[in-house]
Amino acid sequence: MEINQLRVLCSSSAIKWSAHCMSRMQERDISRNDVKNCIMDGEIIEDYYEDFPNPSRLIFGYTIDKRILHVVAGTDMKYLYVITAYYPSTDRFEMDLKTRKER
Image (cartoon, rainbow, N blue to C red; front, side):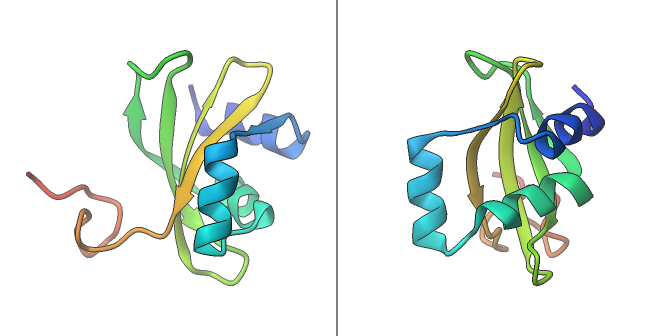
């Protein structure tokens, strides 16, 4: 799955938002537009091929006001499924906020 495939679904609003995702976004003060901006301008930094029911990707991008954002999303090629969105920290990622720290 390439980022362009995700962008096509995002731009056509073929998006399914999980209840978990919406709850976490509200807690973290992340808007749907922030998530869409991240997908449209971001890059895939991790692949989760084993995710069920669809493989997903971790996307690094920015909110509307230029804060770094991570979005986990998958697709069945009909819909884009947004699983979660969060502001990354250096607790789990290197200073670039793209590279996961070794455990």
